[in-house]
Length: 299
Image 1 (cartoon, rainbow, N blue to C red):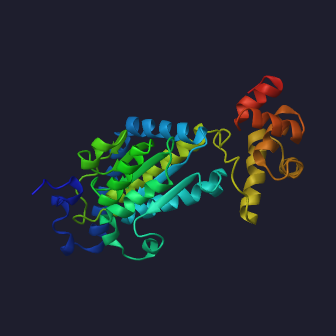
Image 2: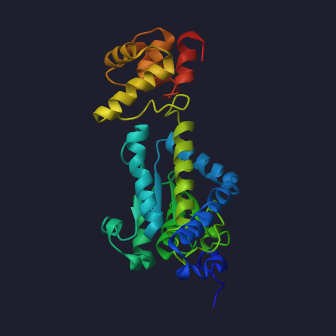
Image 3: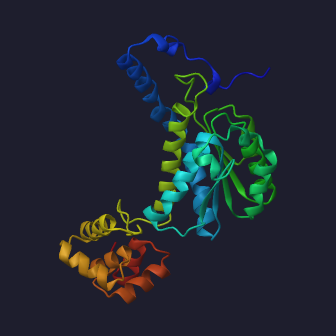
């Protein structure tokens, strides 16, 4: 029998959890959870390498594919969906493949993680130049392994994000982000610390990639899709904060820029019109600082 992954081992600190008062039980879970960010911090160099692969793929017009099962796959679906409204990235540029399909989002589909043929079929949507990111707490999920192997054979770059530094799949990928979250407070329940780590890692991975791709200005969501009243108000505030103008001027700049916050920011900072601002952003691949330098030499 192969050695148990750390996520499958018993945690001696929680052996008596079934006899604990509720508050003590919650304190125990919280103490275990607090170790996760530090564990993620130890794999930031590997995560940075993964981000660079994503930036290279997306900059070249290719796609990023997330592949996962269970908790990992559901987190991947969430991350991919949220990139569209947050950063205005075109639908289909970052896609998530969940073992068991959409049914598995809200229903137990644990057997789907063993379906290697379904995993390999994911590669049918992959071309050379894409990036495929496999997510599995154990680092050995057959669905994810098959997808990564098949994708690499098609010329895609591959990344594994796991909670097992000794993940068996690691030898098949270009970059392994293997965070050691240790034994779970509830033995083998990887929706807990391992799942939290995957959420932290994917949040950081996708946010860093979008920032590197010029989908923000400073720490402001200038590419955000303003699809409801709350977000339209936020968009006005973003333009005002980025440029120092009042809300009325920000709203007028947005109106003149057809609701494109980034264009409005450039018009105000460069003292130009929306047409020239849009052209400058197109010429500089959407990077506000570069567009400003192109227009009038300041950043």
